[in-house]
Every structure is written in C-alpha cells, then in structure tokens.
Length: 499
Image (cartoon, rainbow, N blue to C red):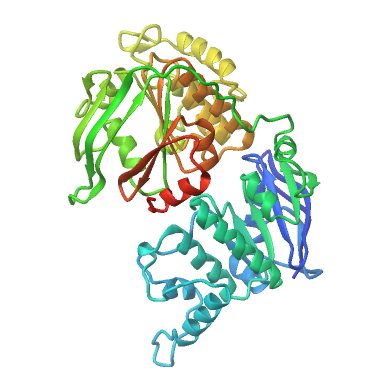
C-alpha cells in the first residue's frame, strides 16, 4: 500500500510546523525521516495518524484521497503507528492491550477473546515472536513490549506502519532483532516510515531517506550517503559526529561509592550493594537499559533519595544525608534526566533559570533582594558562551527548543566551582548539532580535571565519551570495563549476560 502526502501545512500561531510538505512511501518500501528537534517530524506523523488536523493539504492512500480525523480513521485506512513512548496499559495482559478499543462481546455482554487470541498467536508465529497472550505488560522486557505494539498495529491490518524512534530504549541485540523484523515486514509488503536520529540504523534499513529542516523537506538522500552528509543536511552545516577525545593523565579519586543500597518505601532494593569510584580527569559512564537502577543511583549521589544505605564520599567528605543545597555546594553539578521536569522552571525567564542555584550569592543578591541588572548581565554572557538561541533572556524557558533548554542547564551547572559532574541522559531527544555541543562541553570538563559520572542508554555516546564503563543490570554493576570493549560484549552485559 502506498501513502502520499501533498502540501501538508500545519501552523501553531505564528509557528509554521509543517510548510507545504510533499512526501511519499511506496508499497513495501522503508522511508526514513531525519530532522532536528522541532523540524516538524512528529507533527507530520501525528497528522497522518489522526492526532492532529492539517491546515491544508491532503493524504492519499493508494492514490485515493482519505480523510483522517482520529486514529480509528487511520487504522481504517490501513495506517498504524508505534509511538516512542509505548501506549500500553501495564496492568493489562498482552491480549487485553491488543483488543483495547476493538472489543467484541457475546450477546450476554461477556468479552470474547477467542478469535483475537487465535489471530494474535498466528501473527506472532508469522514473525517469529515468542508472545504469551496472558502475560502482564509490566512483567515484560522493553523489547517484548515493543513487539506487542507492532502486533497491535498489524492485528488491525496496518499496511503502512509508522515507527517513531523505535530503538530508543532497546539493547543492541534487541535493536538488531527489531531491524530483522522490519525487513521481514517489508518483504511481506508492509510500507514503513522509520523516524530515528540514529544515522547508523537509518543507513542500515532505509530504501530512501527524506530530510526535514524547519518544517520543510530539504533533501531526499540514498542510504549510501555518509553519516556526515546526512548530519549536515539535517543541521544545515558540517557536524563532527565523533568527539575529539584526547588521552591525558587521570588524577586522584574524587567520588567513592561503597556498598551503596537504595530502596523504595516498601524496602525493595532498587540499587543493590554497589561500589565504584570516579577519578579526576576521567569519565566513568554507567551504561544499561533504562530502569535498571541508574536513575536511583544518580539521585542518591545528589541526596534526592530517602532510603539510602552505604557510603558516598566526595574528596574525603561523606555526603550521604546532606541537604540538596549542601550537596551542590560541595562541588557537584547535576544534569538531570528530564530538563523540563527537574532542570528548569519553565515559567521562569531564561535569565532566572541561569542562576537558580546561585541566586543567593553576590552579585545577584543584595540582602533579600535580587539584582536584576546583575542577573541580566550574567545571562547575556552565558547565552553567548553556550550559544543559547533565544529572542530575549526575558523569555520563559518554555519558549526554547530542547537543545537550547539543555544548553541553559549546562550553562548554569558548569558555571560554578566543580569537583564532579553528574550527567544523566544529557543528549536524550537532541538533534545531532546539539549532541555535538553537549559532548564537547562534557569532554572539556574532563580535560579540565573534573570527574564526570555519565549515565546514558546511548551506546554510541558511551563508547565515544567514556574512559571506563560500568554496566548496570537489575540494580547491580555487572562489570566495569575499559572503553575499548566491543559493542557485542557491552550489549550482552546490558542484557544481563556476564561472560
């Protein structure tokens, strides 16, 4: 089945998110879509799937114009979508999730799952999926949950499948398995729209690549194009995809974590008796699939967790139990996982966000009053130094793109006297241009002799930045390896397989 978009335009006030976009995916073709954050990719796909309505333009399926006002219209037209954040109910079974919204009942009102079960098992067998229809979603690994999402679309005869950042939370082995599934779908006639910022995967999968920049289609490329060429098309300038990491002397231990356990309020261990250290001038990357205790470990170091046992020393000072303010004052900078929830106050101005943890200090504070002129002067300096692209420092932080929000967090956190930088998923959701900038700043901290503890689920990022890699699985560190480790071994460790 073919899908064609003609002249799709979508505005949000003065912002033109999609500007007269023409796009076509042929029968049994994999079309990859690349673009920076805010380029308009998600807006376009939400229009195709009926979550948004275009201001103008039309959608054709097999050459016929269709009207898609809601997801059920898209499904009826043969279009399915697997979202980056899974749309599954954790406490429902696989089968219950599959039939949700499409339930059939007997004349007595009893849910009839027999036909759906048979079709699900037949589909799963066709694609080589091992799926238990009665398993609870919350008990399944992330890779299996994603397969459930794919089966959910195929159950209702989707002939065009939209995959939005489908490998964002998968191990390398799960990614390889997904790539094979996508190729099998193509061989059986399914058309695929594949959205990803991972250029390696795009090149491995796509038949054609469409690049969107600032709401417009700016290029169509072949998979034979180099990663550097594709990155340049996305950003509009040359991009250094591999950061320049020079060898240098590693100093004394800055952070020492000993026999650390972090529990939830019920006493269940989320981090179990782990020990490691980070030295001056070193990046220790903590790798692993999301949800294996990395978040709790990072928060424990910042004293953001309540149920912590063990020792954490910064220099020679024990910091477990300190207030968050005193933890930061001890010399720790913190880039949280979610810049929107934990890194910024969205309604505050850019200038105010840049002094959130130093507002009580001179020259910003005069007694109980804030010096607006001093805050503004410092903000102008940081905006220039960190290339924060904003119309005005008085604009709210919510007005910034994802990359510029992260630059605000970096500018604030790296402008204090530091011993340790704790960076959690620092490039999540960023485009290649912003990733390049963030990587350069992290390496600059390392080269200046600071210790860096990096938490990342991105394998390429871990291998590019780390001096050593600690792999976490089920709340424990399975192994600490040198950064020269193979991708295969690292992937196996992330899946919990210690050799």
